[in-house]
Image (cartoon, rainbow, N blue to C red; front, side, top):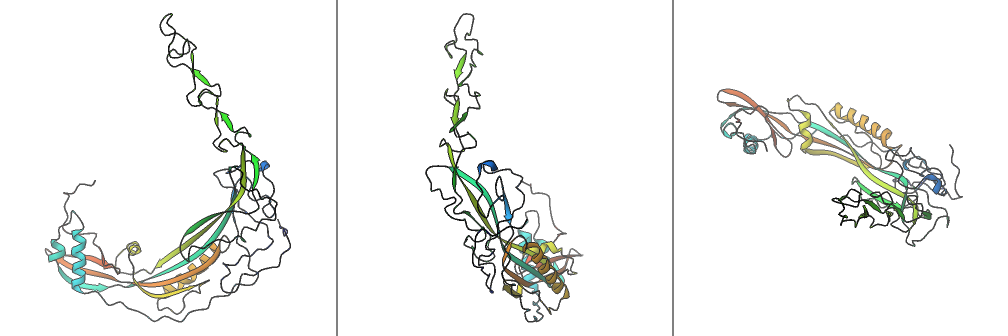
Length: 389
């Protein structure tokens, strides 16, 4: 449905540097997804007044708002310069052995003898590239909320509430996740509590509102043995309910006995750093998932409102991955979020395959990353003396 402007305003634009920072969508009513599965977080829709610009959008639940369209086309990113090919020098034999010894000593069931005394016969470098794309985006959603009414200011209809994307929020910083909940101005009104129907109290669940229960000592007879009257209930056969102290009702938890609620719209703003990686396959034999835990030498970094896929990089797999991920991020996040900044990086991760002899047999291990982590799946000297706790 086409929404009509809620009031006459001068159109704004996003600005040419970063359209994510300046409010837009002037005069447009909010659009929402269906209510979430958790159910209503506020009283029934019939209890709410229609809020200008929010008509039929948040009653009984909430939803994510699509970002506003910019008044002018967003600036297109410019391709960066071609990057030279980089190589990381192979590690020395001493470094490879020290890393292997440290690895073995960290395992309670590993003998350090192969790491210390094994004869290194060959070392082969398999440097590989990792491309990473990060898209820092902002999403906004609204829902009705309420709190006990204690005389707080009521401002509904004092003037038109600002649009959901017109409300300022403080960004935590690029590429840092964050969340802020803001009470939407000029949406607060007072309603009778929908849980206790404005009574401030609810029937006690323990005694079903009776104020008393069957005496557990005499089971309601009033007597214990023969004609001996029950001393616990004084022969009444019933005890006052300890939960409600005999009143038959308890204070309403929703309004805390105030009988009324302040009802308003809450705006939730979330900032999320969405990141995807692509690691170029290499033929060393080391599983690629091992590389997710290490860092490499950063060769390239580009950060702007919208990045342009890297061009001219010597490895075509990196170029193809950049084109694919940039396109995917644009399609995935631009319709549901407001993109504030993107960043792409390329790292060169060192991987060294080490062959060594131990007791006449050949074995291999890998040293990889700036941290010199070691992978040795078939370590030749292990025992079963350790107990797994």
